[in-house]
Image 1 (tube, helix red, strand yellow):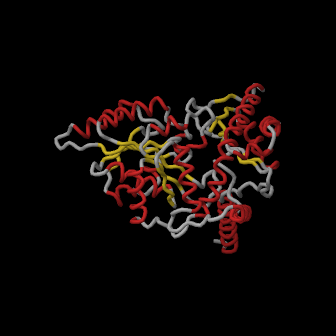
Image 2 (cartoon, rainbow, N blue to C red):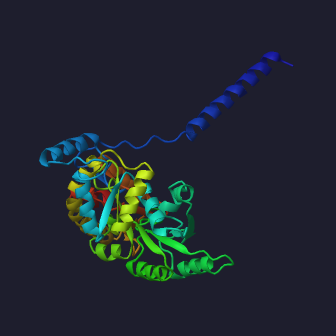
Image 3 (tube, rainbow, N blue to C red):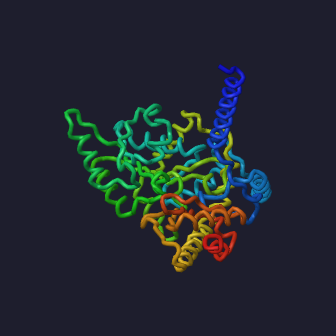
Length: 382
């Protein structure tokens, strides 16, 4: 055997294998995220509920508001801006009382604990935040048994609710349902809302069996202007709304309902370690943003409808939104058009959703108001 030839051949094979492995490793590396222009007052997000928070702008606005309002400070979430925020949301949602909470997870779980009382079974949507995203808090902290309905969908049917109640109450060891929790809109189900007519049917059935109702309305205020907020909230005993998703607060939530229930919720808030020394910072920001947001989100929905109409009129885009959509619309188009729209948007500082299964999501939020509709049409169509 020619040792030199053998060694040369072996070394060459090893180098070739190493080079191939290097190419494969580089190919397996995740692609670098697309680079957008610096965020400014004209940056637009056609994805999500709002623009990402700007710490500098938030701090400046908070300082302005403190200078404009006296006695904003609260003491352990009593009085001050917290009290003002609670009164504003109680009025908006048509409830007797309202309490500030540091998080929506805490608000949801305390609401279910209060409403269910000694009847520990609670009906929920399988795709809801309570069931999917709260680390079994209701089960672990309050000994509640969550019974999921409507897998893969936003709305449980009346038959599903009826069957679940009957199965629970008619077994050899009958168990009463204490509460029914409905998230609306449902983030994990394309932000669809549970229709008001369906809510009313479920509420009537549940109350006929002694159960009470909770609304996880974290994104409730994102609904179109045709949405009847007072009528919707009236079907529920308690309603939770988020303060940070689109109201400019760094954290926080509110829970509204009857005085007796909210008094108990405040007591449990303290038991669970949620009675902060002061909550005036997020409360003041949300209280300032609330009336302006109500007007601006209605304008944003109208602008989105104008945009969709212009895109559909081009013949290159079709709308495939759900009839129960909240602030998430869907545009059907060819992949090359969607990819080109994403790139044009990237260069212009307009974030366009990625093409998925033939569709592009279009989120309605107040950043839509930063530019005219023609700018968005140009991004999508070129």
